[in-house]
Length: 225
Image (tube, rainbow, N blue to C red):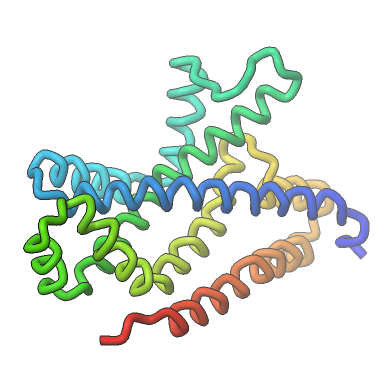
């Protein structure tokens, strides 16, 4: 059976996929939340910067962003995010640049999800917080964001699932994740249907539990209106 023959390579490739998704998801969550704060800020310049970032990145193909990270940052500007003396510097650099590209792209979707969650919070709560003397940052941190995250758990889950599937594009810059191994196996064995079925099943195993988990959490922690 093909899976048994390539088991170690498949597991290693999906391990890289999971690492890409987790690291990129964490960075995108923090960056996206910061962008949402900028888009909600009372300072017009911050709102314009946040909106410009979101519109620019969301309308740029992810493959192009990854190539810009690889060729633009690494090869043109020399930003490799790793020690060039390391024997694995090229692989490490490709992986970290892929995390950067995925994070920058996904953060724009996290931003819009969080911003939509903030908009579900009653305007009276924000006004009451301001009347108590809370600053914008305190209002956001104490009143708005906790409720916003509870309201958008399911949409954030969808963003994370999309990120997990988007990791396949990291193969464009040489990251040894699932899609790159699938391409190699297809070329070596010509068993397109069997190889495709193996990797499709692998991504179902990764994404289906995420959908069920975030669906449960969304219902469990939903804000009562």
